[in-house]
Image (cartoon, rainbow, N blue to C red; front, side):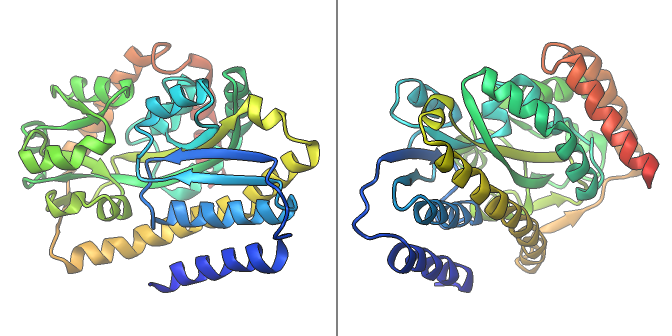
Length: 336
């Protein structure tokens, strides 16, 4: 048992046995699902979050988590929410954007250059995201993060031609990635996240995209030996609940959830970034090869991204949210 897991365990036990009324009857049970594996920092931090809520509501609100994709992918989770089998989940940006399309705007390839930019833009977009989620029957609790993602391949990649000639994966239901790759002359292979590892093993795909920590926790690094040390994009998600279930809670219990989210999801953000830094070193120590892209390739990618965006508005994202995102990004960069 590692140090982080030990801290999680003892904190949960403290809340359950020292702070919470042991005999309190659960009145509101939320069944929550996620693709994140058990033991990952995302699930560990959620367990702390849920223990805090159990304590603060006197044992009346309890979260039961189904991790590792046992409830299916994002779309299966949303279907189960519609019939009441689930009441919320930790969703990927790609999956939830089929319900709330504008949420995918921060996933535009090569958009951000630093986490400071990410944080500034996210803060500016949050009110709009929350409003759009509510319109679709979802209570937006907090954003989650995978982090900057990098091309990872079974073959060396250091220039545009080498990148183009590999079998590229794109997430199912992600029109931004698909359109961008097609603008590069690539016909991507669309797969759900749970299908990626087996497809790397079989050779169906050769180039995939993940954060350093994500590639380790999902074991993609075992097949994708070559890593392009250039951020291809930013990956994130959301923890959202059924509006119907959330609105049925007493006001003080809703407030308990929101206050716990304000504590634990920023910690999760920091832990995710720390884990990505540590994972970079782990991958290097294990012998994964980090490769640099040449300047010409980077220019081609950015030019093609701009061309692709003209085809993605308003189909993939609305013009309004895209303009607001660019305004916020320019605002931050001008301040610097």
